[in-house]
Image 1 (cartoon, rainbow, N blue to C red):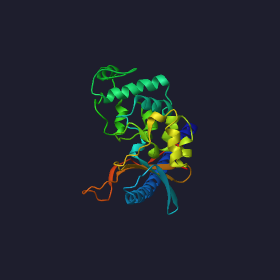
Image 2: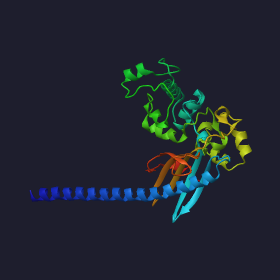
Image 3: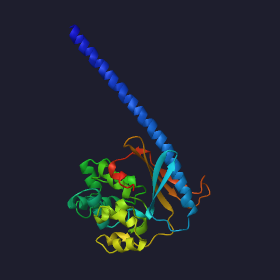
Image 4: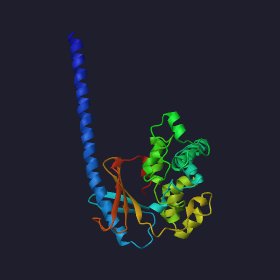
Amino acid sequence: MVLWLVAALSLVVAAGARGVRQQTQRTALDLERLRSESLLDAAVQLVAQRLNSEKGQPIGYKMQRMNLGKSEIWVEVTPSGGLVDVNVASEGLLRTLFQRAGAMSAGEAAILTSRVQDYIDPDDTPGGVGGAEAAQYRAAGWPSLPRNGALEDRSELKSVFGMTSELYEIIAPHLGINGQQRIEVDSAPPALIDALTGQQGLGARLQNSPPEMRAGVLLSGAAAEFFSPVQSSGSQTMRLRAFLQADGDRWWLREVWVDLSERPDALTPWTTLSIEPTRRFQKAEQELIP
């Protein structure tokens, strides 16, 4: 009995110690996130100021590096025209995005494309391969129904029948709302170029090449129908993604959407449209950093 009692007490002590360690680690991680967030926000503000001073000039995709204290921070600037707007994107563009970026089979990508278009279009008739309207949503017990209208926020895509949270997290960095059917060559992020062309590393190589070479490659290849050489001069909406490496291999990301056009009620020369919570991100996104 004494031995059993000692063993039981040992288990209780071990469990308690493990709980304390986990709590300590969780607290340390929360503090690291808060420290990182303050630096990331400062970097975003500095880049927004620079962009505001360049207003009126063509602004394309770029990655900027800066040092704040002892921390090195990368800020990715992506004009909204360099992303995919599912509201107006062609069937081929959506299917290619799902298949290559989302690692779906050709059949799965075709079905999801049909369902995205059915979710947005105003009618109640399923279209394409494996399309779904309200009747199919109800039959499957899906928690939402088709919107029957354009998305106002890319996150609404998660309500599409068959869209998983894992797939959405993969394709979300490639999405934006811009009203453009094609992607601006000079505004497209390297990761999106890689996904649509199926050529890993092509985006980074083109980013470091002259603009005319970039356009020549993207407008003549298999993905030429997805890109446009014309950069919208009216849009001032930018996505800013700030990256910071903390202790060890942990990376933190802060995503902010800003509108550089002037608004009388704004406290800054630009308008902050949305701010995503600071979060850790995986190796696939780390590859965006030169």
